[in-house]
Length: 357
Ligand SMILES: [Zn+2]
Image (cartoon, rainbow, N blue to C red; front, side, top):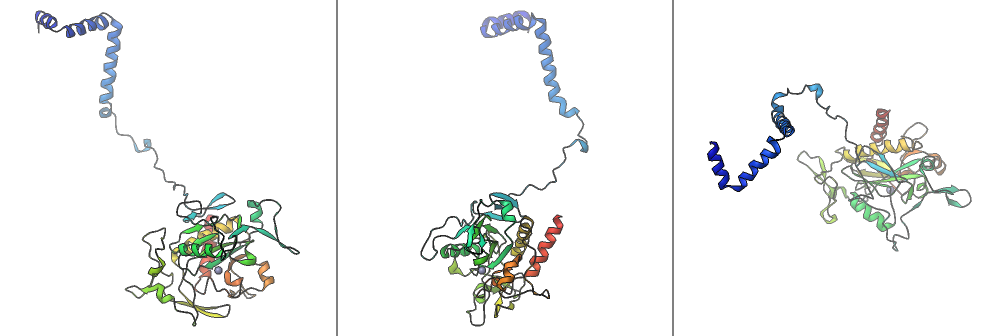
């Protein structure tokens, strides 16, 4: 394009003409503008070509992959409002899907309350309230028993409904799939163990229960053999969906055979608890022992060291500190039954504590 042609185009296009005159005034007649323009173009060019020119980073220059486990928040129990990790799945009464024993409606059957404040034994008055509110150190110097029950309802959802209906409670429910539900703060007294309520923590472990020769054989209604003849738990249809936290969970007794034994003079048959329940209970028990050292990791034993499977004499019970079955507290009770594997729990919890030391 020669100069005459350019002028002709400019004459026919006033807009182009004004652009060219602006460029001339702003850039061509001001040398510092030319320098700035050149630097800008150089920078943009460098940006575009930089990735091609740079060498791949050495491995040592890369950020280190994080190897630490994410901090769990789904394993927390609450004591006087403070959270403590257990290492196993816990759903508290404050969470979605939890069971809240604080939500209680008094009825004729249930009475006025299903829990209360922990109380202290008094030689004259029986039981008295503590002068100061309970805090963690006070609880740690007082709580000394962990009472184990089976719920005889088969699964925790049904257990909670029945407890509420009867004006009873337990701090924990342990479902077949190993999910622990905390229904009350451990600061409070649950109604599950009569004279031991104030000094203890209680857990209802899901299990349909133990049966004597005179009882209807509910085990046949709850367990069916698989292809290998091993028992699988099937919740009877009229009882509805157990709504296990682990939705596809299939429950099997930890030992396949029916376990027999004598408790408080009654001969009984029972299927074992599930492996998931033992695994969760071991972690919870170890945690409780760590926080409440007065709860020793042992069961009631006679002078020779043999386990006792009947109610303890009152004086022995008063001095006993540790893991304890409901049947050790009341002669009419047989839970957690002959199938409960005390050795598995105690050895497991002791190992858990050692591993953490
Ligand atoms: Zn019980």
